[in-house]
Image (cartoon, rainbow, N blue to C red; front, side, top):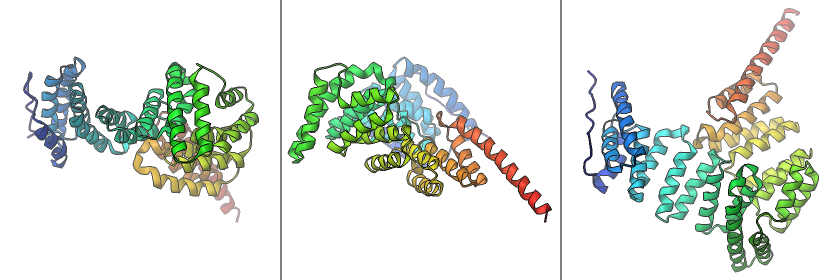
Length: 394
């Protein structure tokens, strides 16, 4: 007989810090709750969510703690505990709740899960820890302007001002981030100045001067003409070779400009310079090896240039390196891996990679991957028919 949950009604005193930590850490060791219990937990969560939405933190915590006490794998309830504790200002206690959400979701983890944990750390002024979580979130949501802005702030707060500059320039490159442009301009002028000071103390005089000039260029304007702005304008106008030349000038002055290498790779690709694009992507991924989206982009350029075997080999290696980050993170690699195998006429292998990509849940790749699965079925059918025809003619 299924044991029914007995959820606490109304409000009660919040458990102490030690008891809550034990509940979050120890509940994972308990047996999974039965289907009937999970159904009860889901119903109980709906009323708990009403308290969360109303910011009645104590009442929400009482119900949520009852849920995870019986169903420790209930993701929404665990996340709700973290949310309620954040609302009460108990940021340190919120950390294990958000960490547990990430553990429970495994390969289905979302950018928002890392974002929640990052905020909990940032509120405690643990900037290095917050930065690490924002970097994980960025891999799953590389186009989220708000997330990137916070990542830039944490780069700077943790003492990585040159990386903060790079993310700011990336934000300024994105048309979709126009709403935060003025805030980014204020930030980049400040962090570029700090980056210049850091480089000066390190004895890198030329790079220090670059950042000082960048700070001055952005500091007195709200949309002026830096080299980066001019290169962006060239890209928009379809003048890819000219944009590439500007980006080449930027990385010649400062070879650690991550975003400039990425834009150079894109400009070279659009200009039809596949070898130049691959070389720039390689440099970018040396500086930022965690960017699975751009791993996928480089692999596609390699396939388009006929380097299919090399692309398939690199895809296999990249997949193994990054698979622990979750299905969505490796979707770009899987898609390009499929293209590389298709190029080698390994339709069955390609179909398997496209199918994996289609199951990733990535909004960007799922539809395209499904179409590719159908294409591979068609190619395989044709290949099988030709093989049978050849065998029959013997």
